[in-house]
Length: 146
Image (tube, rainbow, N blue to C red; front, side, top):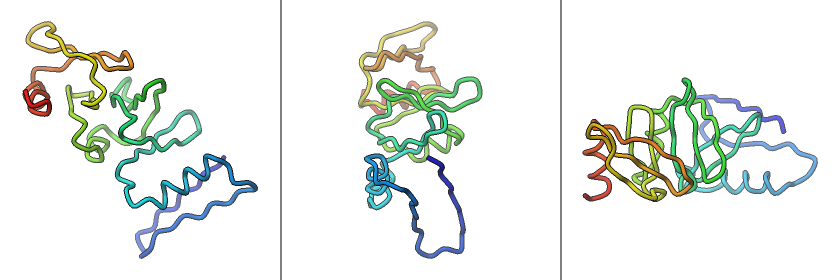
């Protein structure tokens, strides 16, 4: 499906027009999300040429890899065009930065263990792993009330 986005600062009441030849399940979901008052609990990401709206509760990790910001869900990974700091601004208190390049969802942590040189190792419930750097360890412990 082709998607066109027009951004105008002159519009007082933003709206969306959808042109289609049939009402599919995905279009119905998009309408529900767009009409929802709680849009801050969603993140728009890309998978190939498709745009997906992920609920924040479904995100496990956001990480910079090869100068691209990747968003990881349970079984899928997505690309997002925003820099990591902008993604971080839109996340809720369930998320914490664990390194210069990685943000994790605290509710998706499987285990945390000591690692090398004062760092900690983290494993998420979907098998993703990363290190918590010493710089971000105090904020991580505070987020977990440790």
